[in-house]
Length: 297
Image (cartoon, rainbow, N blue to C red; front, side, top):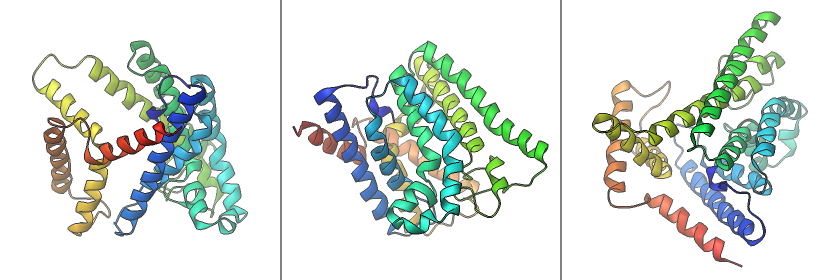
């Protein structure tokens, strides 16, 4: 959620920022819904991203410390609250369009909002600064140990068995699942561990861009990955469309040669595009739409 910027903003500036993010959220929801109509063999996250953006709008004026605290509280409490609500039948009462992004989908806000809030906090601090990079790396390492290590310790001490995988949230069959940290189980341990890993990745990438290799393959590699980052939405949608058009099966996962072809294709296409254009095609649409929204009084 780096769109929030370094300063919370006030008055008209804050309203314009909120309007731009709201438009981006609406477009992501529409795009995600359109892709879902293609029935791809993957769980789509775009509509969920749109929901996260909308949920974050009331928090845009908060500075870094409250955002970080809220991210931590959400990570620690929301998975348990989600489990209790789903066990009580809340998902059956809510409309499907609300239940899925909040509680039951592959990417429910109960699991994923801490990442958005932490991203907003990091944007306030400016991750390009060396002190912030070191802080992010230290906190990331601590969360990594706390999340994955804490889960393993809790499971061993209590002698319980937990699911090895999930579908976005802890299954209702056994509350012991709340102690796990497997991918997509949506536990507090998984969220903390994955958030720690994400902070380490951000710190590492920021360090690479701040001190790229003087020349040669190192600098070229950084530039190639950065080009894909500038076209992240276009690359995401593009690979979904390719998977659907060619009927590619992704369960349990793509063969290594196919995966390598996807990576090479994305790197090559992004490099060629960014050599001529500042933004990807979908990114340009998002930018222009958000710009128009910001101009509305």
